[in-house]
Length: 327
Image (cartoon, one colour):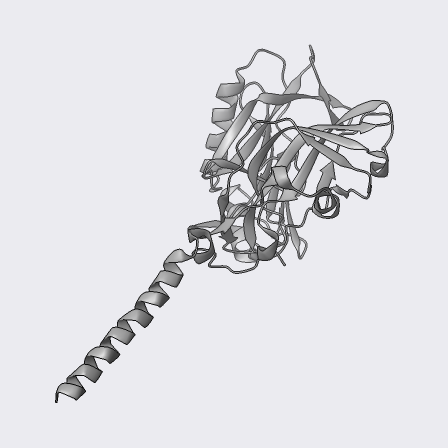
């Protein structure tokens, strides 16, 4: 009996050691590795930007900002808009006629036109009976009216915030609208709305494109609405480790970074001519590339590139997740 009892005790001790070792192994793993519930995800796709090819590129970080170490990844609930949902949206906007098209549905009723792109998840609404007007206006009050209109028409406003500083004045020039810095003629006021996810802004393949744009006259009458849908599942996310952007190898920036540059009016410069880029600041943001099933963090680096004798302002998108988590 004594021998049997000793064996039972030894087996029990061995079992405790094994279980404890397994538990210690999992506890020793970083929380970022434990939380990456989605596993590897697709590399973000930014179609509208130009990839750097120069092998002589050097980069200089001038920003004192602290680099984050982890960030969350979110999943898109629906990769496209169903026809039934689109027709319900159209009804909310007052369209009772049948649409035309297959992947982009178009409704025309009176002076109103509505396009809904099912695959790329955006809505484009125009009320051509609304006229531009002259007179004073408050951008903040117009932004409130625009947001109220969006909400009344059944479009989600969660996370939307108006950029009332960078509004534009649009003046009619024939059949087109042209942006002007100042005007004594009738104008529309164009206000962009950014979408925030947690404390970070959500960006799209075109970095200058906001989540929503509303053009209205100084009386608050809505002329045009452009709205990108962001059906993000905020309840389920994975926490992933991020690359240290300040320790980034130049070759990786050239291979995986995406360069965005403004049109200067002097023609398009050749990226291979860039010798240096000085990064003055960077930020973490979320990218909804309108292709993959995830909304994931990216770095947005801003600075200047030296091209010949010119300094040209540039923006570089760079995937923020560690390389081992991208496919």
